[in-house]
Length: 427
Image (cartoon, helix red, strand yellow):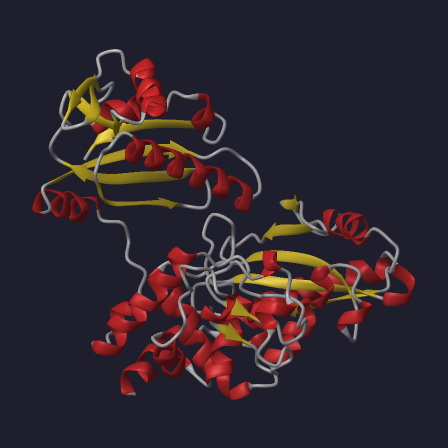
């Protein structure tokens, strides 16, 4: 498809520029490792090492591979931290199953994630799950013809808002993007296949969930072989390097459905716009609200400081709390969403029915003849009355205007514990 060739050409970065920048960082880091007499070597990882990084998206992974025999029982993070702080400014430790580090270079264009790993040859030698990351890179590099296809998939998912396994995104990780694209043999084949994916079963039957197992390690029985906690994601993607792991464990149903919907739209009407992330347009939201007989409410939030994934998760919980309470308050939500600059500022928005709720709400109770439940209902609702053989009660609502409820919610401790500050405003 000519369209995809044009898109791909725009996705390819200036490789000379990237190589020059990264080589400087690698040389500096490896020089310091040698001076400190640390038996380890810094190498590129992630999309940089796979050759699947996108123009303008220079989040660079670097693995510092420590000698297995010498450092198997050592604190790799502590050793690496000492080396980094002697070599670079703006080193930030990030806590994880094994601590790693963020490093911003002077240009601010390149942002590094420096990850300490053991230099292993097979997964059985791993002490920590991160030790297997270089093996993921090696696996993808076995499929050089798929690199452009992976770039298309990644750009498509980024634009759709479904890319990233962080807890505040719950989308497709880079590793899952690699596996899916390679498994189906390309971007278009993946989109077409997604329309036929099993989407789960209301009765919880395990066979009604899509499983991707590149090497068929589980012989069609992955959902029975793996622990239930590992198969609760919308789709199960067996890690080709670690077959006891579901690489898509972080993927939720919402992002799964959004991807399939966007794939369907693209297949029906291919366009470059599907590869361009849309900026939030307040005026567009306001117009949509008016046309849908809704009301737009905006909330400006300032994020707390901390690890990106943790801060993002707190923002998400605050947003979900507000939405949940609106639903419990009987407000009709037409549309909703939020965006975050991955630093300080976040914007929550919700479109609710423009009409205020009635001043009172009618609660329907049990049939009068079921005395036990009838008596309990009368205890809760003192002004209950009987009609047509059932008991009812009319109670005054605390909130009839969604904005008033939101004004109350953003003052509650649950919200205050998750954002530095938040304020509401009309659309």
